[in-house]
Length: 141
Image 1: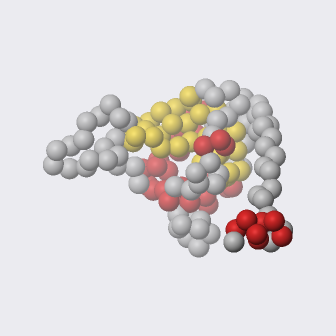
Image 2: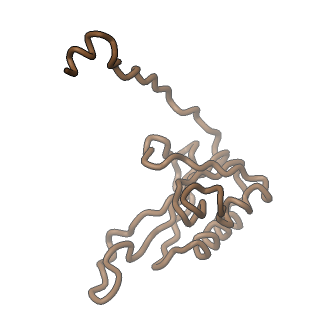
């Protein structure tokens, strides 16, 4: 059946994706941040087995240089925002801050009903928040 429908033109081939490289940013123009698990820390026998220690990595998108790495045993919205404020005090204000759809950054699942504090405070500081789509590692610096 599939062969007949395809031959008659009722099933079309998926269009070919035209990929283009990301435009190269100037140093400190765009900063990307993401949480990573510290795999060197063993799981607690009586407690957490995953995400025992997370590290907030902040990378310059223009040069791929690690600007900050802050470790914490329990990152939640408040401690994540504190870590970002600490980074901004140390490094200054970038033009754009890129992050993924983590609920600690965007709030609700859609990101519009209940925006997290980070998404509300960045425009007040003159920083453009850039939320990248989930499952798109090709957009990381």
